[in-house]
Image 1 (cartoon, helix red, strand yellow):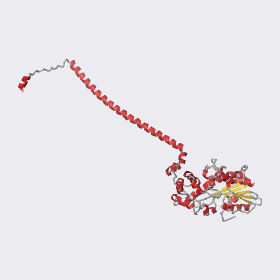
Image 2 (image 1 turned 135 degrees about the horizontal axis):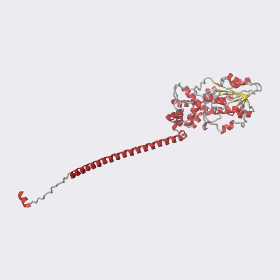
Image 3 (image 1 turned 90 degrees about the horizontal axis):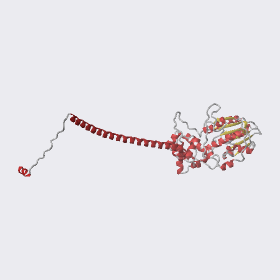
Image 4 (image 1 turned 120 degrees about the vertical axis):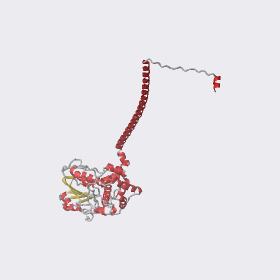
Length: 435
C-alpha cells in the first residue's frame, strides 16, 4: 500500500473507535492510499478479515497481497450486495473517510482542482461516462442553479448558473481553467479560492452522486453491522456532516425525528435529485454482482463522527457577521431566475391566483369609476332642474302679485277707464294744400 498516495486523517482515533476484535470482519469503504486499511490489518489476527471498497482505478494499485484483505473495485453504495456475494455478512465495524483524496486533488488530469489546468472531468470512476463538462452541457439553467445551491451552498447560484450557461451556448467548457475564466466576472475578489472551491465541490458531488452513495451506505450499514458493532464516519463539509448526524441521531437520514437526544431540533435533509445525475440502469446492473441479501437484525450501534482539519481545497466562504440576507423569492425576482420556464410552470397556481386578484381589482376600479361618473351626471341634472324650478317659481310669484293688485283695485270700486281712439278723417286735397 502506498503511504504517499493520501495521508489518512484521525488514524488512531478511527482505529480506536472501531474497537477491533482480532477475529472480526471489518470494512473500509474508502480505501484510497490504504492508510486506514493498513492500520486495521495490524490489529487483526489470522482469523480476521478486511474488505475495502474504492471505485478509483488509481487506488487499486495500492492493494495489499495480505490474504485477509479483499479489495472491491466498486462504489460503496453497493455495500450489502458485495458483502453478501463474498459471504462476509454480518460485519463488526465499518469505516468511511468521505471526500476526495490528496492524490485526486493533486493530479491535474483528473480535473478535481482549480489550481491545475486539465480536462473538466471530476469522475472518481473513469468507467462512467458523465463528466463535469457533460453535466454543464446537459443541465438547464434551473437545474444547474439548484445543483450549485444544494451541493455547493454557492451565494448567487442563479447568477453563476446563468453565466455558465451563456458561456456553454458559445462553446463547450472542457477544461478547469476555462471554467475558472468563465466564472471570473462573478467571482468575489476577496473570496476567490472559497468561491471556486464551492463551485467545483458542487460539480464533483453531482458528477459522482456522492450524497446519493452516502445515503445508500448509511441505509445499508444498518443491515450489515452486527449488534454491538461500530460505525465510524469522517465528514468534511456540512452536507455530508448533516446527513451523517441525522442518521446517527435519528436512525433516519432525513432526520424525521423532531428532536435529538439533547433536545435540539433536527433539521431535515433533502438531497438534490436530478435525472441527469442519477446512475443509469447499466451502471446499476454492472455494480450489483449478487442479489439483495436479507436484512440483518438491526442492533444498537456505537457511532462516532470526527471532523477533519481545515481542507485546503474546500475552504468554506465565511459570511460577514450580521449581514442581511434577502428572501430567496425576492432574489429570484431581482436576478431574473424566477422568470424561467420551469419556475413559471412550477408556480402557475400562484401566478393564476395573483392574476385573478389583479382582474378583480381592475374590475372593481372600473365599476367604481363608472359609478362616480354617473353620480356626477345625476348631480348636474339636478342642478339644471333646480334652476328651472327657481325660474318657474319666480314667474308664479310675479303672476300672483299681479292678481293681488287687480283684486285690490276691484275692492275699492275703481274701474279701469280707457279712452277709445278717435278716428280723424283728412281730405286728400286739403292735405295737398297744406304741403
